[in-house]
Length: 207
Image 1 (spheres, helix red, strand yellow):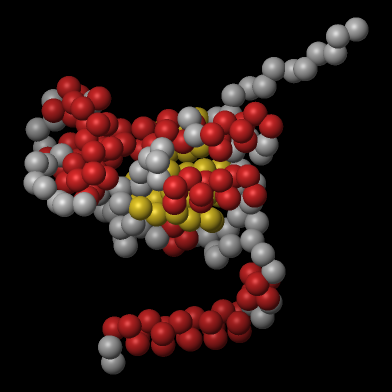
Image 2 (tube, rainbow, N blue to C red; image 1 turned 135 degrees about the horizontal axis):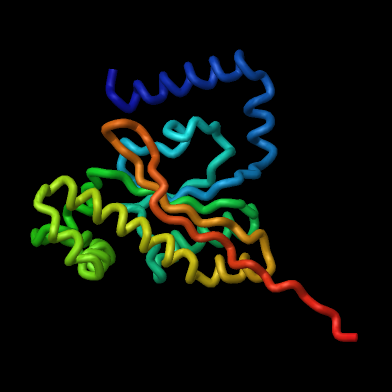
């Protein structure tokens, strides 16, 4: 059996078992989605959003890219953000990086990776902003992991500056932004940065 054929077989088994356990599951899913969370994660195959958070299909709206970056000219990410925040009205936007990230590790090196170089410049800029702290660490793995945390922090800040978030904070659902890092070695999520919607000043009527 080819590997892709195994996926199709596993899908049939999953659908059958799910239908037995919850006969209305697929009917409910087919009628729409009301996720509370938008997850912006890394494309790394070891960091599946639903599995590591114990959530079911329909509970998390997901966007993934190399090293979980929020770049202001990435129309793909911005479209996902707009749909999730403005139309689905998610309450939380989560940027989730992970320790041992290959993209972060590559950004610390000098090797040319072709098309990836243009993408990774965003992490290299974060490294330059925090270079003195990162370079004070001698352990290579620890340096990568610290840059992963700094990068997640920067992506949370980038999110807070987007037009979509600004509009939502001004008059919409006012989502909360979270920055987490996932540990491949222990399976745990570590919160590293957080931005809550700004407190709105109460409106006073002029008498």
